Image (cartoon, rainbow over all chains, first blue to last red; front, side, top):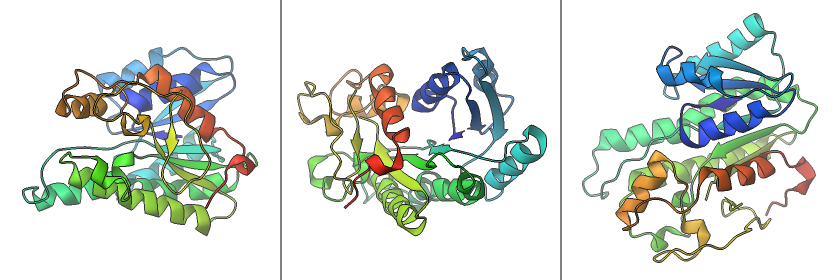
Length: 186
Length: 73
């Protein structure tokens, strides 16, 4: 299952897994009727593979849980082997000038969004017998140790990625049956 | 394939070193997405150096690894 699959890494990951045989791939998107969402159905399918799209807005407290309910009731999906939290935002400003609302928005989308997704998908991941994984597309921008290497004004983005790096590590160690990992897709 | 786990992981997954004038280490590089290309322009580059085609196999290889292949601090 992959959240925010419309463009970039999300879409490319989706295309990869759909092209493989016998995968049921769930794409979480903000707008089920958006043209880009509809275009996902044109991606090549491997033999026996299938695409399901569900509405998940990362800042919604209810979307992810509703999507899981839909998966179970309408598509008979009761197990998830891999969940990738991919959605994110990045705007640039020095910390001295960044609007507080923008800082909060970064944390909401980039750090709390994946936790919403984890909480909703956890019961289905727990049913997997294939070493279930919860991956977060993060960034080295969230590395505290590497912060001096970047003379760039992405404080809000970096802070949100540092937060989700920590939270993902905690998810990993709080759930012994699960591999949870943040990734820098460089 | 170029991909790094975040700093807490000790398992090395760097496969390729690329040229990057300001940030020679590939872990400071970005993928050619809207976000990655925007970051690249800030440091004077036209686009990010890493293509989606180069990045996705790395992500897939890590996400698909069996649990026991990870070495955590």
